[in-house]
Length: 323
Image (cartoon, rainbow, N blue to C red; front, side, top):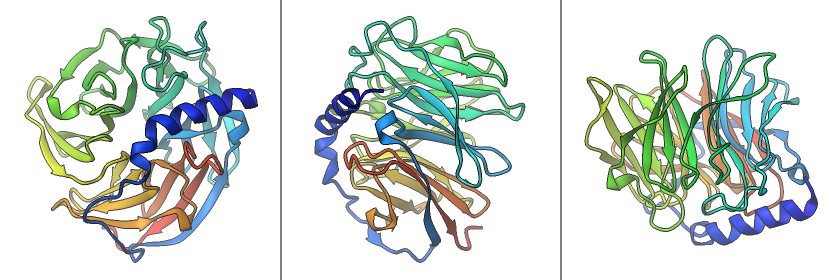
């Protein structure tokens, strides 16, 4: 990727995200007590478009990640070595029609126990936008088309029902697609998922019989019950005042969450009562954090450097007494 392309991408994101940069959670205080042994484990190549957007962890601590601007899926070893697994095909128009952002980007990622990786791709074109599958030794294959006018972003897997849940940050929709692929179903179009001008529904996880979704613009965490027959219940707002919230993970303490706040450049612990505590910030090495994952007590945080334009990286830390 050329230096000019990177600059254009950075400019687009900076302009779109400017309103979020100064935002901070209304009730958050700084408390690094729960998080220790913080270090930047891997630095990525900004000039090559390696802006990490989402993460899924393998049992051995290997991380599969998406690089938004380079359209790539990569693997980061426990020792920090990065290996590109696949590059998604470039749209014929360069992705200039990708809603809001104006460049094609790889977003959500999950994996199944057999090593299959699922990735979301937004290009603004009907031939490429959608859900892609990567199997070991095979090229990427699109298995579900999604609307070109949307921006598929967050991806969650319900292994029990073998359903994938996809948030669309522009259309304010949660889609479902079977792991085998096929036509997507609009699972929820609740008003709480809509954006207020930039990006709405974003991070997503299946947890305790519900789908949990963040809304970046509104700064909210939503819980949407999964009813019988895979029907969506009415959304419940579980936390507010978190403008810029991106992806997240559950800590293992009930409904407690660790969430990445992109513009504010923090990671926040959100308690079940909705109150927030900042546990990581720029001083720890964060550069516009996009996603958080947890394996045992090991915390993984991706930073894309969308607006800092300095050091996209993978930060690792330990969460004390998280069970």
